[in-house]
Image (cartoon, rainbow, N blue to C red; front, side, top):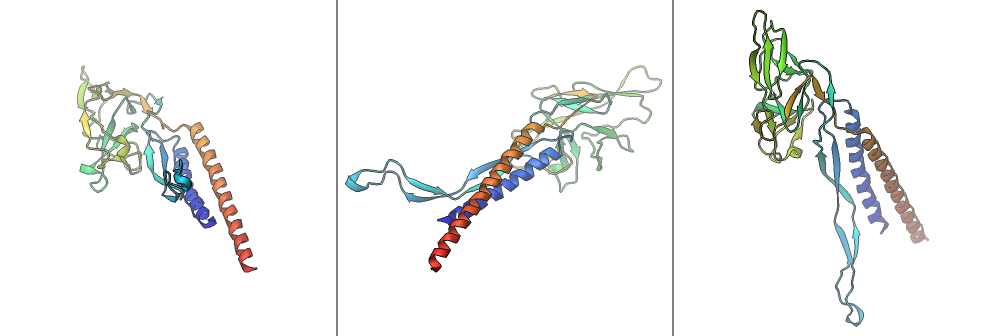
Length: 270
């Protein structure tokens, strides 16, 4: 019936609205360091059986096919893409990027992340008033394990294995100040986004595995670079156009169902 078509098309509009929102967020963050794009996954809904396959009909001939009418679509979730963004050279000694797998760990409030830790691929660091390495953001999230930089440090060097050295006045050899630790997850797509390009652990992601950069499957640290957003503007614009056209088609379906119902209503009044 036309009522079924009306409700089915409505589910399509609702699902496509979510897709448009996700695409808009991806495009809005095309220049956000460490940002990871999301995609929307769809799933068809229940079906009405108007004729089952294999049922015996006339002359005991069994139907080779059935008659099923679907009831629409719904969004099953948004899936993160952890494809590496392009490294952007800045030549700033506090800008770091991970070449390979892993996340930087930063301190957050306990109600935001498990054990008060969140994870990020953004490596645009700076120093706070206490000389600690922190994200260059409005909240200044502190890198953990905490690395303190002396106020009289002349230069700062971060090696591929995450070891931080500083040069001090009157000291010939660079002094080690600590080592950056990275974290990986069995299922990074299960991480929860909480803003500020931060992710927090969930039951779906599994517990973090922490280790040294360059060891096992952990990536290496590159100094003087930041990881750009992994959003592909061309692909996102194509998805935007596809969603717009699908939205128009579902809108036309609603109009067609409405016209059919109007015709039926007019006929019944006569």
